[in-house]
Image (cartoon, rainbow, N blue to C red):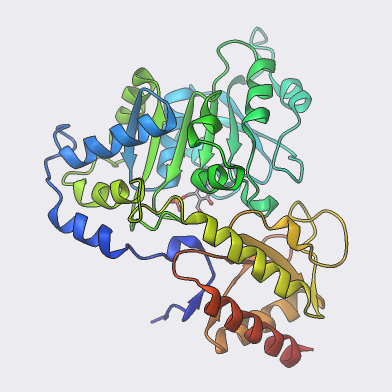
Amino acid sequence: MSVAPEIDLRSDTVTHPTDAMRAAMAHAPLGDDVFGDDPTVLALEHRAATLLGKEAALLVPTGTMGNLVSLMAHVPRGGEIIAPAESHVFNDEAANYAVVVGAGMRPIPETPEGEMPVEAVLDAIQDASDPHCPVTSLVIIENCHAHTMSRAITPAYVGRLRSALPDGMPIHVDGARLFNAAVALGVPVSDLVRDADSATFCLSKGLAAPVGSVVVGSAEFIARARRARKLVGGGMRQAGVLAAAGLVALQDGQDGTVDRLAEDHALARILAQGLAEQPGIVSPGHLAQPSGDRLDPARATTNFVLFAVAGGPSRRTAYLAALRERGVGMVAYPHGQIRAVTHLGIGEREIERTLQASAEALADTA
Ligand SMILES: Cc1ncc(COP(=O)(O)O)c(C=O)c1O
C-alpha cells in the first residue's frame, strides 16, 4: 500500500474537503440528477454559469470528462482540433479526441506564456472546401497553462484570437485551474472566458472539493454536452453530495476557497525563491523558463514551481527519493523537470521544512 507523503506537493488534486464542505455534503438536499431534479447540482450549475457569464453549466466527475464532452459537443467525426502542443488535452487525456470523438488534433507550439501565436493558429486552419482535409472544428486554450509553470492566459489574448478566427470557429478553454488564473491576474473569472464558447474548470484541484468539474457554455451547447456525458457514462444520480462541496468552494466569504488561492501563489513564490538559492537547483528549461541557468523565482506566478536539479535523470530520481524519505512529495515532470504544487494543505511551516529537506537531499545526492 502506498502512503501519501506528509508534505504533499505532488499536486493540488491531493487537497481534502474543508470542514464546511463536509458539513454541506452531509446535509445537501438531493434528487436524481439524471432526471434533472437534484437541487444541489442545479444550484451549483446555476452558480457556475453565473460566475463565468455563460447561459448554462454541467457538472461532470473530472476535468478530463469536461474536456471530452466539450469536444464531443463541438467537433464532428473527421474534424480537427487545434491545441497547444504541451496541453493536457493533447498529451494527457489518453487520445480521447481520436478514440471517442473520431477527430484529429493539430498541436501548435506555444510560447512561454502558454499562447499559440495567432498567426500559427490561422495557418493551421484547413481548407474546408478541400475533401482531402480534416475539417478544423475547434481551438483549445489551456488556462492556467501547466507546462509554462502554470501561467495565466490573459483575456486580451483570448480576445485577439477570437477576432482573428473565422466566424463560427469555437474556442474551448481547458480551465482546470481557471480560478488560479483569475486570482493571479486580478480579474473576474468571467473575463477569462468572455471570448470563448465553452470552458471547463475543476473543483477538485486548488478549490479543494473532493470530486467534480464544471462545463459552461450556451444552453444549446450544454444540452449537447449533457447527451455526451450520458454517452460516456457520466450521468450521476445523487450527485448533490458532490455538488455541495463545489458550492461551498464557489461561495463568497471565508468558507469559499477561491480567494485563498492567492496564499498558494505567494507560497509557491517563496518556495521558488528558497530553491533558487540552493546550489544544485537549476532552471527547468523548456517552456517553464526558456532562458538562464538558475531557477528564476519570478516565473512562479500561480501555484506551480517547476525546476530541475543539476546532474541529469539519475540525480533527479535520487533527489526525489531523498525528499520522500524526509516526508516531502514532489513529482518528476516531462522534459527532465520536477514539479511542486502548493495548495490548501501547505502553509509556511511546510515550505520551510521542504526547503530544509531539499538542502539535505541535494547534499545526499551530490
Ligand atoms: C490542465 C489540465 N486539464 C485537465 C486536467 C484533467 O483533470 P482530471 O484529473 O480531473 O481529469 C488536468 C489534471 O491535472 C489538468 O492539469
